[in-house]
Image (cartoon, rainbow, N blue to C red; front, side):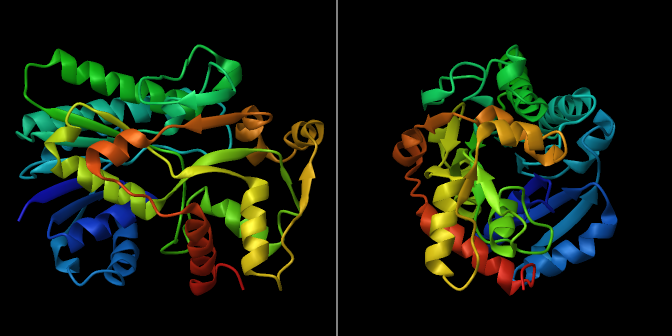
Length: 338
């Protein structure tokens, strides 16, 4: 029975990936920043697998010392580095996001080498591909976000780009036979497992609970959380994935598209229909700080070609219409929306 060290076990993607790993017969050592969360996340995961005895936890922060990270990675066979800071609003100092993302990644990779781990799967982001160049077009794994273009990047996207680049440079510079694969998902939707929901699922929540009476004219390449978890495992198990980047998206949806799907499925609920003009979104962002990170999406349509994952790893994502509705249903199931 192989053991996987999985960082960020309490996150939306981390929890789903843990469930799938346990169901496939792996042992999982999940890291979290605060051990007080271990009981609650264990209870959540236990509802979706009968192999909860194969899950254990280690408390550690991304900025912990190399010695601490190497100790946590002791006696594991594989590493999935999913944890990364994701600020809802723009941070006052971008280094608060960039340094934990970059340094945490390098420490996890060194910990893997210190313990003889041969394969690491790193969660990057489509944000490391599609920004800083043009706002419209088709992007693939050969593209990289231009972090020097600060008008068309956010601290988060810069952090994911710099962390992934640092990971590839680290692996290329070492003589150790460590294999690296990076997974770059779009905006992640799908069923939530608890009240602590992902940022993308919050879009669906706000449309359903009436807190978003109108929406900006923006959209994203999206993907189901279950599919991203599956792709991580496919990448872990397939030698064809070694040394490769894989974009993980199922298609582009605007906020208008999401609202239309929800209105069709929940005709009894008051789902927003109006779009906000761009100038008003920019004005409101001065008061609603959560709008500031999405301003660069106005008038943008960044399309992603995810055929590489489909062809090399036989990855078949769930249709986004199902992902959005499954997300909505889970919000009702967990009483996040009444």
